[in-house]
Image 1: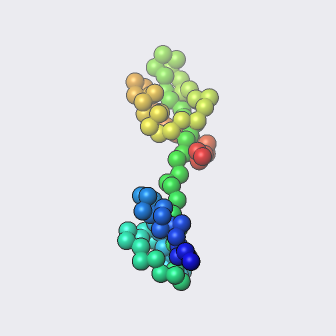
Image 2 (image 1 turned 90 degrees about the horizontal axis):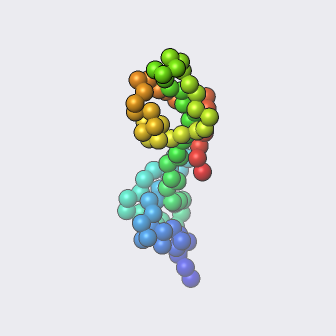
Image 3 (image 1 turned 30 degrees about the horizontal axis):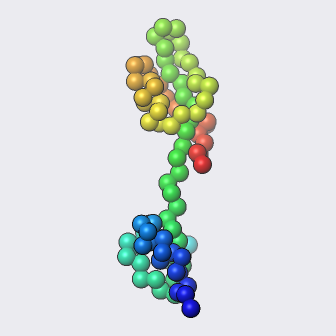
Length: 97
């Protein structure tokens, strides 16, 4: 008979980060899981990745311009490094799957 958490044990052995539920609904990191049968464990969910629509100030047009697509923060910093001002439009924030 397989251990109740055998799939999670295998995932952990393969390098997955594991969390355990503390009984109040909070999930906590478990760096060395004990694999107690009456404890709930899960693979730690990946951190969400976000993108935004951005505005940037163009000296050429002396105006603020809005991008027509969503960009990650890293991509925006790379694209707009030559512009004096740029910022994300917070209302446009979306999670990337």
